[in-house]
Each structure stands twice: as structure tokens, then as C-alpha cells.
Image (tube, rainbow over all chains, first blue to last red):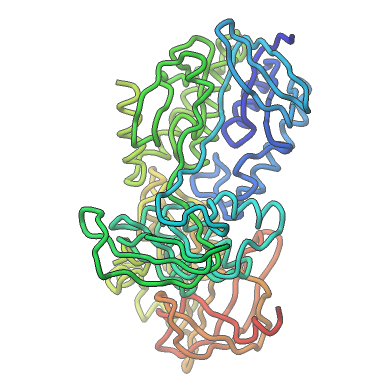
Length: 358
Length: 166
């Protein structure tokens, strides 16, 4: 059994920034990551980040990860534990952890859960055929292990992930047959869409997949056009040749730990599903448990980082760290979040957050 | 329509196109950013302070073409790869500088296929220069010599021999 001051669960952008901020204020921080390396999804982001310089705009996600990890590793009051998967959270405050094939119990004074999100699946005939991938798996194969996932891919979903992964596939020398989206408009940033389109890849809104073709593996797909009520229009079916189908149809917050802890949960579609209710300080309804990043609402990594800083700041401040600067820093992070969310593309997240705090 | 197809319309492009007079004076940046997203590296990277983003990082960038020199720093710093440099200062040709993130890189003097915003082939273009340095962070600035009337249409290119090299 171990007793810790602040435990951060999850080493993605939100968790890294939460740990950094709390440590900068002087708290003893333990960062638990289930994977064998830190960085979360940042390590697959080869594009330059949007946002402002405060969120490292213009720097590639993969380089932001190394930068944050390096800063953390240099701090004597930070304990980084990879291959440490948090399994549960118990009534007495215990976190149970599987760490390098060992079972551990940790009692934190404060916890920050930054566990991220999982990919949504899509219903269609033969969706269990080999060759049907989630976009995260395609990125892991290409960008982490250097494995080409296929020769010709059909992408489902024109949100930022579908667009970015399509571009990464093209950079890896993979042909992208088309990008489909069931909605009437491209959901991702239009600059991403434009750079893919000018390289010759069609983006087909109001289209989705009906069926994957093939017996042992994907050899093609039947696609169909949707009407204004999101219903397939009979007779619009077309066959697309491809050896992989990549799904980028949204993310769900990975919120199990909050459920286990008995946090008040709310179902908010704009935030991606069930999320823990929280105050502006990122603290949930259970005292001492904070939330940061996609697990609190699906958003861009820039916002996840600032939420991490804010959760780290408030958790450390609640233990008496930080001194006089706390108020000013809190204001700075809150302003950054508002700036990132204030435009038209932030409308969905704003309406989701409004429900959360109601 | 841009939001449906990913292709900026003629009206979209007209809004961000410098005057012919300005283009004939020498290179200047054309910022094809049509959606308010939280982003400002164009403004912060410009060494001349020619790009304004206002107080709200969601505002669309506004460029002062009297100050812009067409140096291309914003082109390689734009996370959306949405900025291009167009130069009509030479009588019989246009030079377009565009961001490029594919390998292998083209060679100087190579003939490539110029592509439009729709991704269709316009015809041949000549690679004049491939600018690369550490500060560009792996986004290369490729200079293309193109037919004069394509100056506001060429936004990408494909290599003719890229398949053979691989």
C-alpha cells in the first residue's frame, strides 16, 4: 500500500499538463500510464497544432509530447510510472493498479483522472472483417510502428480525425479512395479538408458505408447516399474497391473511474456521452477527484492541455501549494480555454459545457 | 461549397485575392483561410507584422499586402497549410510557392503536374526551388513556375515519377 499526494491517471496531453502544473507548484506528483510510453494520442499527431503559442500552436503534436515529457522527467518531485494500468477506484479512496504484472494499491490525497476516450464503432454488414480498422489503430500502425496498414483505404468520417488520418495515410504512400461522412457538412477543420481535396481525394458528405465486401478480408465496400433525414436513398449504392475501411466516427469519454468513484454523471451528447459533472475548477462531485481532457468532453488536444493545467493547478492549490500566483494563473488558464472555445467551431462544446454546469 | 466538398468557391477565393497591380509588383501571400478556428501562427510567425488576427484568435487573418514581402514564412507555419505565395512580377510566367509535406521531395528543374483546388491536373509546372531548413519543421516551401493564368489556381502538385522511385 502506498500513500501519495497527487495522482494523475493517464499520460496523454491532459495528464502530462496536469502533472506538470501541480509539480511546478511544488506538489509531489505520481503519473500513472497504462501504456509503455507517455504522450497518449499526441505521439500520433504529425500535423502542426492549431490554437495559440500558449498551447504550442505551429508545433507538431508528436514534438509537443516529447517536450512535455522531457520537462516532467527533469522534475525531482514527479514520479512517472508507465505500464501502470489503473484498474479501479474504491469507496475508501484506494486506486488499484496493475503495474508490470504486479498488483498495487495507492491512496492519493487528490486524483486527476485524464483517461481520454475510446473510439466509436459503426454498424454495417461485415464490419467484423479483417481490414476494418479504427482510425487510432491505423495511426498506431503507421506512426508508432512504421507499418503500412493497407494499399487503398476508404475513410468513414470527415471530422478532424478522419481528415488528419487520411492525410497521414497519403503521406505514407497509401491511396485514399474517398472520405465519406453521413452528415451534410464536413465536420473537421476546412483547411484539413481543402489540403486533402486538392491532392485529389473526394470528400463525399451525406454518404456512408452500407456493407464491407470480401470473405476473408476487405476487398471493397458498398457505399450509399443519405437523404436529409439521414436515411439511405435506395438505388444510390456504389461499389468502392479498397483493402481497408477506416472508421473515424467519433469518440466516447473513457469514464469508468468516475462511475466507480460515485461521481455524479451526466449524459451530454455534445461532449460525447457520459461525463462527470464538474465545477469550473475541474473538480467532480466527489471531493478530491478532478477531471481533465477528452474524458470530460471530446475536444481538441489544445483544450485538453489547458484543462490539464487548470486541474493540476486547482488540485495542488487545494493542498496549499502555489502561493500568491494561483489566482492569476487560474485566470490565465480560464482565459485560454475561453479563447479556444469562443469561435463558431467551439459552439458545440460551449453548449455541452453549459448543460454540464447547469 | 467548401463545407460540403472541401473546395473553396470562386467567391471564397476572390475575397482573399490581391489586386493584379500588387501581384505584378512581386511575391505576396494569399491566405486561403475561410473558417473561424482558434489559430494564430500566421500572425505570430510573420517577421514583418503584416498579418493581423485581432484580439480573438478565432478571427480570420487580415493581411496587409503593402507590408508583405512574400517571404513564405507564414506558408510553412500555417497548421492548415492554407497559405500560398503568388508572384506575377515576371512578364511571361507566374511563380507559386506552396507548402509540401510528401516524400520523396521533387528536384529543382523537375517537371511536375500542377493541381487545382479540386485536385484536378492543370498541366505541367517546373520546380524552381525547394526551400527547407530546420525552422520550417519538415514543411517544405516548393517554388513552381507555372503558366501566368494559373497563378490563382495552382495549389498542389503531383510528381510524375514518384511511383518509379519508390
